[in-house]
Length: 354
Image 1 (cartoon, rainbow, N blue to C red):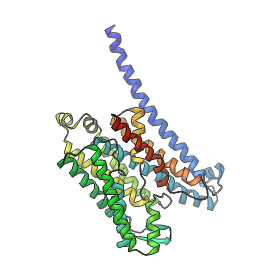
Image 2: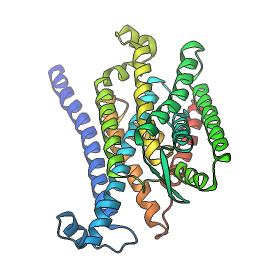
Image 3: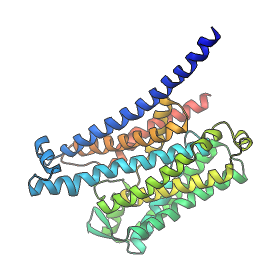
Image 4: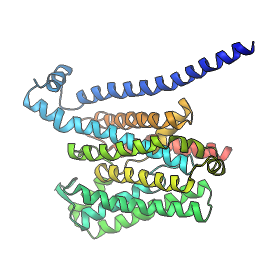
């Protein structure tokens, strides 16, 4: 009997692991199918045949412009931004041991938006083409300022966690306060700007994927790719942190260093994404919680799973915003907030019931 039990344990564990892998693969497949649909959906009247012919280089010139210059950068940027924001939320929730942590709720996204607004308004990093859009002329300057703004929130949160031993709830409240502070300073900058720049910055802060270019996508892909490699290399450290700070230190984890570097990489990801597509809230909160429910908290699988679900959520939100009242396009930031706000309240109430 004992031998039978010992033989059954590995097989049950293998089934457990295969289930996680299948969930991740299914999420990726769903994202791919949605991307195919998103290329075809919209007010341009493209048929599936037109899309296929354009993708293989045999379509009409106007279809080629729509697919390759407008829709493909938008779709791929939605997927890449979703990956980055979701994995950043997954890691911050682990290293801060706070289920409500994400780049948005910790004020990191608002800090990045403030920095980007400073670069655009005061340093001429952006130019306007019409009253409701802005083109980034110097993406590197915008990313640097956005990163400095996001690090402002990061440093405050880390100082509270290290020096004052504040509770997880207090860290989120501090993030909300910092987000309000950065939003207020951004509004002051808008007050002294001309009307065209005000309209441009307001539209930019809604979160919009329509202005993403191939150059922006390349920069986002490089930063998100590097961060994913770093996070996966530290997956066992995050698993140890989930057991408690003292337990992690007992296992040889350099907790302070892992926390500092993790917040640094999360801030960099949020800064780059926000500087190109504006504030997109709650993706970093919703994605990891969905996957935690489905596959558990093992970061060997949770990090790639969060990346996959983040891409799916943001692509679905953007596609919905483009098609729900077509030809009018709703900002994707508004769609994700409709999804994320109820989840935030649910997680908050569930934590207090415990």
